[in-house]
Length: 448
Image (spheres, rainbow, N blue to C red):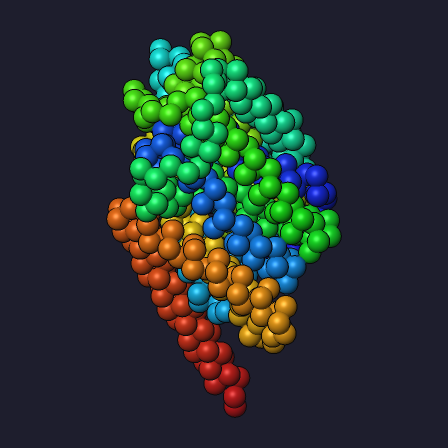
């Protein structure tokens, strides 16, 4: 085993924020525009604000748990240490859906949009190319990825600002500026359904908790980074949604839901802005892929170190690169599923894993601070019981709003995890019995 090789704490607050934003990918707003628009019946502003409220409580809980447990592993480690190891395994197993399918979504989105712009080149060639490039960059290390991601994130934010400026210029007049917020034609349950899908857009703040071991002063840096990332995200998503609803108050008939983001960009800025969009999207997906592979490889490392997964493979850290190189290569191979899976299916897998993890991180705060550490003063009750319980209820409700096939696919994945855990325990028990038997034989031979 190579578990003696440690990850090095080199990441600053600035770097960890950009890694989180890179994982979140501000341009994801356009990547899932059609799916989000359809699921919320066009009420994107309300859906994003609703999702923000749900995520805000959970981000609060992640901040507290990152102070309590600074090791890599995210929700898996928090639930394992605060509630129960077996439940931690199940949450970590569900979280694998989130983290494993995020690089797949990066490859899929890249292939879809590049093929839409260059129809002569098959989408699978774009997917394979971006996957290879993301894998190579991740092998170089976390600091290299963070420094590279910084500039690409700034480019994305610049494009969204340009898009908003053009939307504002296209507004002939604003008869009712509150119309996107106060409409009553669409049922609120539809907006909640859209919010359950849109939660995917905020994923990224949680991924940085997997980088705790590589972050300087992680107990302070990670909570601050989470707050900054969520604050930036809500501005980047709500402003263009609000301006788009003012500019296009009537339903938009998109030709292709998967590439609706490109269509809305061309409607606002023409073919020229569409071309710029493709270039920026290339940077966006590249950085999202880099950050998501970094996160999942560290989650696999945490599970490998504790022998939840085979430690000879998943606990390996390259002695020179100081990266979980084998995990990165494994994720690269899994990401080739982009060739055979649909974008909406991949997003459903991610949302199932993410919402499961979010729910139990809220519960972990209650178990760790309120139950175990007995912080039950008035302020402690508010901070460690009321707020996380509210977050758990909101996330639980959004979880139930996931589509039937998403719930079925997620439950099948959990069943596979239960079977794997049962096999692992049976195999471990068999090894113990074999060792005891061998020891008994050797002892009997040595006895005169």
